[in-house]
Length: 150
Image (tube, rainbow, N blue to C red; front, side, top):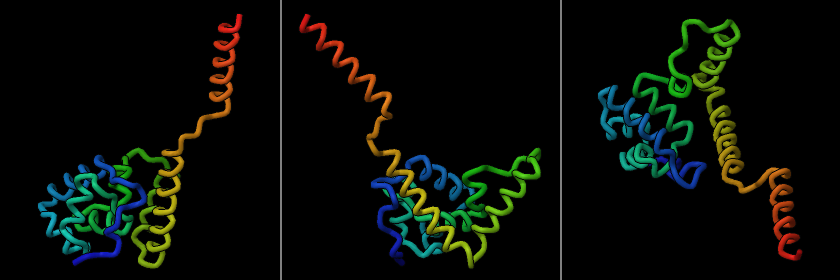
């Protein structure tokens, strides 16, 4: 059983911390990698690659893995809902959970989240320095050159 989503995720390499957390949740649910792979319709090797940080799951694979283990995306990323939430926080969590669990909106939300993650990763890996850092370094170079000339 394989899935076209088995290519490496939006990052050139997976996230080892995410993989460890998924492995821990799977083990607490008493499931093997083979059990999860069957429920999610991917290969056991793909689950292993995610758990070891070799690759990143798509949002669909992550969502289905979590459902198989008895949890959901909101709890995975945000933890259990705190008792002392404000009304606005409760509304936010309810809306997020409804979007992720709705079969009609979930594919759209999944695509948006995958695109967002890809763009965030690209911006995090770009070697772009703020203008003030570039200016400070240029001034330091000029100061050193001026000292050498004097």
